[in-house]
Length: 402
Ligand SMILES: *Cc1c(COP(=O)(O)O)cnc(C)c1O
Image (cartoon, rainbow, N blue to C red):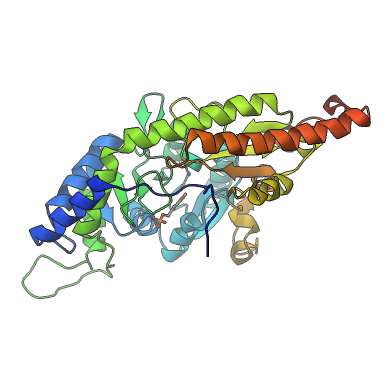
């Protein structure tokens, strides 16, 4: 099947990645150990400002192991952002713990006041909370200072899902530097890819050793096969680490390209009534994906109409993550508790992720922009004919929902 003419975000690889993988292949280090793997881990530790990094087969595997290392297990409650990719909640379930879905603030990050309410209630009810899992949505680093302060008060470890935020900086701290442990993803759609892969980063070497041990079948260091724990086959291949390392060297290039797209869309949004960039201010964001939030009353068109109009021009766009508490698999509130205000659902209904990848040219982005401008222009021509300007409509939905 032919893909869209302008895709949401495609991985970019070239000579550097080809050379790296061939070098690894020729070196004979073709499985889950080797110099490329060691180097990739060292580079990841540097990029995230951590003492330790363990590279694994996916971001999902990284979450699973980070949660186990943090001590989450059967019977525990684990609050996580409801506005995320399913892997966050799935990994919590793998440990036997129960995810508790926490709604978003207006930027899409975990609503810290809801987390506070949850932790207070759990403490008074005597419920065991295994970990807190905030997500850096679309690359925006959440308010980890506030989240960790709260979690510390209740003695609960924080595992940061930084799958989307590698390269971001908030208040001088790089993505992945917060929480007892944090995880990264190198899936094909992320800011860098190893074709597949992930990593756990932390500052405690004992925790890193535990993650490494669990990732390699929990084999004891003796000559025969000795196992004291149930382990997993989650280690990253040295060949893929070579790709990841070559991609990491290009991170500044990817950041600059995605930043240029974000800035372009931000300038555009200023000219379109009822259209805002999701996430608010974005100093230091990696701009992994740029999403807009459309208030149909003001904009004169809704997110579905925008997506269809873009698609008719061969331009791919997509709704933001569907909140976990609305997913059929997690729909039962008896089984999967939630603290919701409606903000994540609002962002799902009215949000739209625009093409943001580094392979999109400025000319292509201009096409996306003019398509949205036309839609807005057409809507407001109709408004003018009915002499009902956008000012007649109510407040922005996002504000009324929060
Ligand atoms: C991509 C992603 C993951 C999972 O990473 P994989 O490498 O695809 O397993 C987890 N959490 C979030 C928020 C993600 O976007």
